[in-house]
Each structure stands twice: as C-alpha cells, then as structure tokens.
Amino acid sequence: GDSVTQMEGPVTLSEEAFLTINCTYTATGYPSLFWYVQYPGEGLQLLLKATKADDKGSNKGFEATYRKETTSFHLEKGSVQVSDSAVYFCALSEGGTSYGKLTFGQGTILTVHP
Amino acid sequence: DSGVTQTPKHLITATGQRVTLRCSPRSGDLSVYWYQQSLDQGLQFLIQYYNGEERAKGNILERFSAQQFPDLHSELNLSSLELGDSALYFCASSPQGITYEQYFGPGTRLTVT
Image (cartoon, rainbow over all chains, first blue to last red; front, side, top):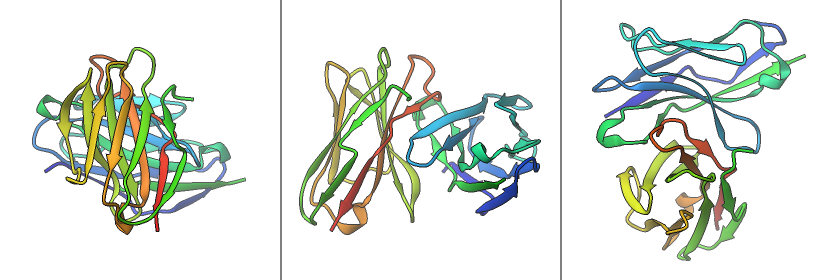
C-alpha cells in the first residue's frame, strides 16, 4: 500500500536558520504530494502541493519539489521564523478509486527559537 | 478559521459507551472526510462521504460508523469504546473536484477512561 516516511523529529532551529524536512513516499501510481501544517490547538492546513513530477509547490516562503526518480518531496525554507513553529505533515493522494484519501507521514515537530 | 466546525471540542467517556461526533463542512463543499490522530498510529484516514454517499473507506473499525445528512453535515458514531480509541478525531471538507485540497476542522479530543 501507499506510505509516506518523514525525517525523525523534533527539529529545533534558531530564527533565520535554513530548514529542510525530508519526505519520501511509496505509491503504486502517480500520486499528488502535499505538505500540511498543524499549529498548536488547530486542525491541519494545506501548505503547498505538487500534482506531477518536477512540479515545485511553494507558499509562505516554503518550497518542495516533486522528485519522481528519488520518490521524494522535501520541504525547505531559507529563513525560518518563530511563527513557523508547528507540526509538519507530508502526505500523498493516489486519486482514482482512492478518491480523496490522504496518506500522511508521522509528522515532524519544528520549534524555532528567537 | 477553516470554515469547518466540529462539536464537541472535548469528550470524556467510559469504556463500553457510545459517542457521536458532529461535523459541518465549509459552505458549498460536498465531500466530508474523517481522520483519527493518535500518538501510536499517527494520522489515519477513516472514511469519506460525497453528497450523502460513502465514497472511500480506510482503516475504520466495525464499531465505528458514519453518515452524511441531506444538509451535508456528518456524524461519526463510535460504539463499544475502548481505551485505545482515545484520540483526536478530525473532520475535513473539500471543494467539488479538488479532493486533495482538504480543509480541516479543529478536531474533537476523545478520552476514554
């Protein structure tokens, strides 16, 4: 079945540091890939998406590129802020008969210190 | 605020009991999804409804059931509760034709004692 693996957390950074959170996936077809973010006490929010190979999703300074050859979708940000502290989830959707089912990674806790 | 509402916010109940969680999707969204988030299993898809009909099923236990009503709100029923059912239950909705763009509610935290 489909699966998503994220780098182990938690990740602790100082403000303005560079962020990378690794994500790799296993899927039978050609999935769409996503990063969702969960701030404390809230539900998940879609951060960015990529629907085909070599697509780059970007939003709020975050970027991720769909790499089919390495089955990866790593999240990056050049300069993190304290307000980026949250839990980040990598996810995929196969579509087709799976319809809207999202398969999530285990989540990576990010803490940014001033 | 995603526009998805869930009630109640917290629920504490005993083993063997039955509870109902309620979700109202964003205005205009026809699809509703239920997810369970627990420390040991992570975030898992339970079930999807589209305009009142079941569309996709995930790792949902037989003790759990869901439905979507004509006004598009949805309910998740959990029965014969066990300690391991303690978790955050999220509802999400999506615009028509864009199933991956899911908007999540704030969740219902269920504690089974």
